[in-house]
Length: 120
Image (cartoon, rainbow, N blue to C red; front, side, top):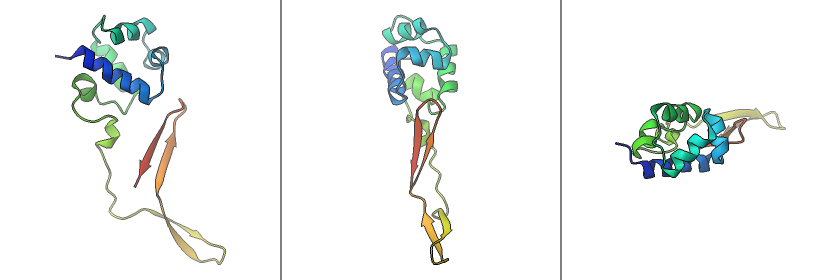
């Protein structure tokens, strides 16, 4: 059974992390704005279609976390890739000597104004 008050708290967290108002969130997942309002107020329970739209629009939202709060959000934190060696870039300096540079972080910017940051 989904605890509706806790579900709305998690839904608000997703909106906050992605810096979206309720109306922007509704547009992003493709539902009517009143649907978001009714779910956030506790008037309506979220449908399966609603939950699927959230998890499809936001790849970092794990359905299990959204429904019952178990696990982590964003879910990318769960799947940490451990490289076998430290990645590095090679570049010639002004003396034509090859210098190894280690990657400290990678930032990916999305067209909706959000971003993900991956640090070593």
